[in-house]
Length: 93
Image (tube, rainbow, N blue to C red):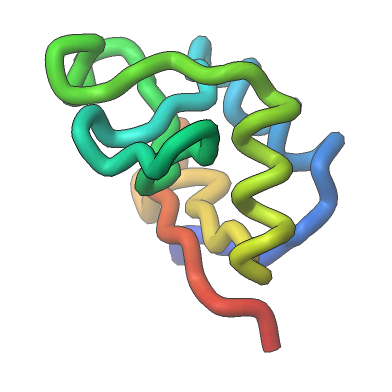
C-alpha cells in the first residue's frame, strides 16, 4: 500500500488534520520576532514538546502561514496504513 500525501493551504483542512492527531499550533522557541510568531511547527504527542516549542493560537499560526505564503504538505497515512503526523511547510506555487 502506498503512503498518501496531500498539499493544502485550506485553514479548515489543516486545523482538522492537526486536531485529529491531538496536535497544537506552535512555533520554535527563540525564533520569534517582536510580536510575530517564529518558525512554525505543530506539537504532536511524543514530539519535541513545550521545552522546544511554544504553543500559539491558530490565528497567530495562520497569520504567519499566510504572510509567508506557505502551504502544508502532509502525509495522510503511512505505507502500512497507520496514521501519520509527518508534515512539511513548503512555499506556495
